[in-house]
Length: 136
Image (spheres, one colour):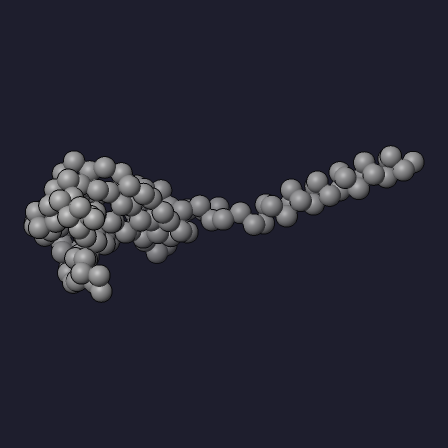
């Protein structure tokens, strides 16, 4: 009798833990193709990191190209092939931040020197367009 009661309580605890875990699921971040359908990568990019939330992604790459050449590349690239460079500014850390629009989601590009200053980090940020969130 006690063994049956222990099994029943153990089973109930397991079911409760399983159901509780279902409600705590983090929302899935958008797919790369949703926020970066037309991503202009720098020359010889090397993947560094990817992070994201429910409606946005950030992708960081490292290129061996010097920062000044990468900045020129993006100022030119984001004014053709359907892109329109709409804003550029330096942030508090001195990185160049570009905002570009296209038919689809906008793109933020942050360009900063790597520690060795011969290489350059390029951070891409994109967001899922309003109303394009997939059904759960």
